[in-house]
Length: 576
Image 1 (tube, rainbow, N blue to C red):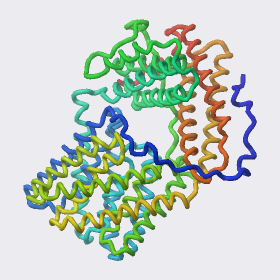
Image 2: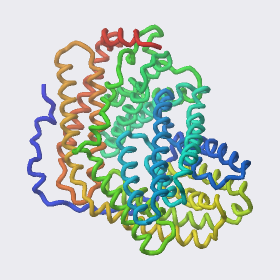
Image 3: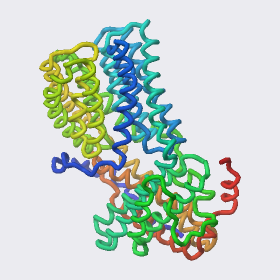
Image 4: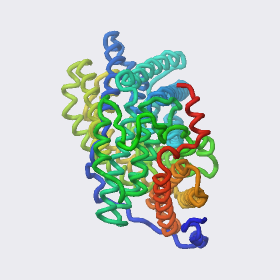
């Protein structure tokens, strides 16, 4: 049984059509969004992880070493979306990556004083950091912290003999960040999974409301894409580790209800979905739907991690056909142009221009342009904030530390609302960090920062325009093929008339999420050949119709038949 989308003729003539130039928007670029539901976690974590080494160095009278401990401390910003078992591994890799970046910068700075060489190395490091962070999907704040730290370290005086001690300080700060990141597990061991499940329930409820109000309109399509992404993320959170616990099984039951609401919104109860999401706050018992008996084997049993989205090896994400490579090239070219232009203008800190360029690069040109506008506005307002804060910060080293900690908290509190709002706090904090060794004249710092911001933003966007990304359409074609195959497999299972359909349903959900992400990324590129928009729409509609059919099959079979016996036995035999 073939899917409707598979019968659509391929757009073989698309490469011969003229490229289209898409308009770069201004409307809504600076509009605030709703804050992240977990903004306080990275905000509090980075404050604690930074305060401990900063106050220690203050007591020792060595605040000139803050840059190296701060490199490790800023690792506390990462992995807050991951379950704690997965977070322990991922955060350790973040600390290792930060230490490697600092080591490369320190050794380079020790071996050469040529600003041209330092800019080249900084651009290469920024490109590598961007590529690895995107390939591993480490999440916000992505490569930017790595690039900020390594670029600043490149232009700090250093000798080879100092490298081991400075790296030891980075590792010490990273160890503190790791402990701070893992500490909440003592109080709420399933916190990340509970939050991911609650997001899936709320998103499914929003889609059910939108589908009933607008049918197949644009609002319903957006809500469906958001719900599919939230459900997929919830499965990834639940299946990130193989441990089986009663709480994780109960959460899996709720994610299945969100998944069913995504596939059949007309039959969903948005009120019940939101009520379950509300009960997941805190540390109370996980609510269980009324139609699940306490001793019943639920849907999470036997489901392995690849059913929520097969893990793609890192080497395949970085291979010759990787969609990340054009972004990598944009980052390297843009950072190099910005750094060299800053040197030509005689600015004493070219790494600020380099970091500005590095901060811009997103999944496509339109998003990169948006980030450029946000960066410029945020930095210009931020230098005014620095002018107001500097008199207090210059009262003493303790005041300087307090100012930096407050700004770090403010940055994380605001950046999820809009990048420019977070930059208002990041900019003065970055300026104050340069003053731990010695206080400097605010006017000189402000002028350098403004010039480097404008240079980095203009040349960074220019590099994104010049380095075209024709692979975005190829990525859509691959995602289309994967979605069509997943739809056909799910329909084949339905046609067979027996057996579980949940594994195929989850694979199809993951494929549809990937297809939507690929389509959105390609839609924001300039000079892109014609996109197979009709095929994408047809594949998405066919896939979601198939999802609805799998839900009906599951309901007809009943909860007890939803789990493959062999898989259930494998789960039951897994170590706790």
